[in-house]
Image (tube, rainbow, N blue to C red):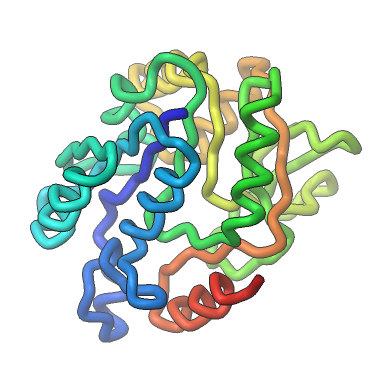
Length: 232
């Protein structure tokens, strides 16, 4: 399977709170978070790990070139206005079947991720999205599901069908990339609007619950993430 990492953001909130590392290089248990993701994906037989960073990340680019000597890493350097546009810039590297996408600061339990990938690989649906009932996000994306964990919608505010929020891990078939291209052509923006379009266009999406997923948006999230990956 192909994997992708979106790492084109600024990480400005971390910098404002005194974190001196660029976000992709924030260490957890001594390993930069982007390197941790690459190693996890490689451990799940990644055909390739396709990463987009912005032009203001020279330290990250140096690390990625170093890691590309050991792992199947492809690097795209591009400034983009949103995560959806970042995925668009990676799309040519992701065609040819299923792919799994995360944002660089998505921290999860590895055993749960293994179970998630297994279900995705064996599934005949168009996509499986990681979700969690743990809410520690300023602007969570609420995910509506039916009794069989089929996704019925994505919402900016709590909804009667939303027990979960999006976890920032997306498993999709390449037909989703056709819809992505249509969204860009129409001037759409934001990953959540792309996800809504997938539902509106009739793609069959399922939700896979994780116990806890943490995004590193603030300095205090680093300690939370350390605790999460230390749990067995």
